[in-house]
Image (tube, rainbow, N blue to C red; front, side, top):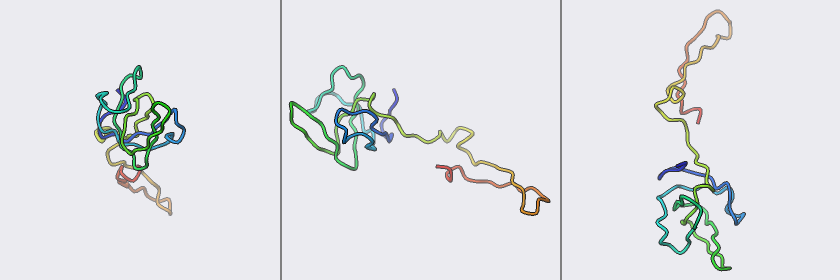
Length: 113
């Protein structure tokens, strides 16, 4: 499973090109009971988007900010896990302008995101 509820993801593959590049929030797994049903697509998520996305059904197009998207058309956007070394405060050694001494600087990891 690439995505999980609460993740942000980008739409990387879509039959309707207007949907490409949309940033969405993963809400929950689709139970297949809605108007739009994706068969043979694997895991399908209900997502929310700040801008309307387009779905096509029987030759008609529908626009909404919430709807189903197959997982294989999404790429999750995640930062580093806070428990990992790179997620902790980073320490860097730098030379002072005069070059005589070294200082230890603590840079919060949040500055890198």
